Image: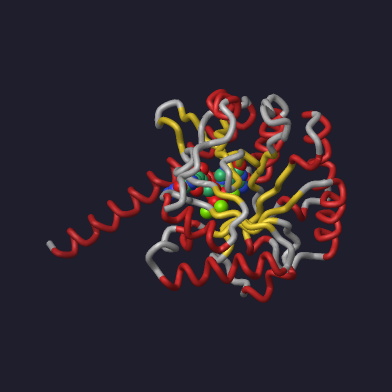
Length: 284
Ligand code: C2E
Ligand code: MG
Ligand code: MG
Ligand code: MG
């Protein structure tokens, strides 16, 4: 009896495993098709200065799935990675985001930059410089409106060829940002070795700055260090006025989060831009 039940359990478990593997393969096929047919979409989230001026917008990919609704990147990026589609996806996002940015109004005469997330693989590709250059040329936007975000772990111990390629783009005006800073392995001291002009402090530390002394200490240390090294500092995931005030107090240059705006579809983002600076909570 017990043995039979045991055997039953095993086969049930493997049935579930096969089903989930099947689903994964199915999803991978659907994603491949979506990529080929422009079936993905981008939302844009503003990054604002201390006075609410929109400085940059981060492109965040979404997948309007035929039967599962709008899927978030956390759900399908692993599928893309599994199916070796991550590079292709990043290139699609790069082209599409830059093209979209070429349509943005600049009400105060100051054009808004566009930030694109890249997986760690992309900068190492032999045609990295060409891929970025082509996207810039195709869109017609200025080089200095392009920000490329990479996580910390993708920026340490780079082969010299990759560093060189990044240097070429920086010389043309592109900026690189360390995304999710503080979640990788590098210490503060290694910040100076990261080839990036912008440091994005991870939401994990931002969320606690108002009430957790150690989160506050981390945020302050990162900002001080970034300043000392001539980098600019962006806080991610700013949700409350308190977080904004505390971060402003330590000298953060720019802010991104639900306090200002959620990521929104392209048309809505253009409308946000047309309204001028976003509301910034008053001190006190
Ligand atoms: P990320 O680059 O750190 O992007 C910020 C994430 O935080 C976004 O999640 C955004 O919606 C979310 N967020 C923004 N403000 C707030 C806030 O105030 N509170 C909270 N709780 N969350 C906030 P999203 O869009 O789900 O993207 C998740 C991650 O997926 C991104 O993290 C990025 O690593 C990756 N990703 C997104 N688009 C792309 C892409 O085109 N290519 C690649 N390679 N990765 C991407
Ligand atoms: Mg990012
Ligand atoms: Mg981030
Ligand atoms: Mg993050």
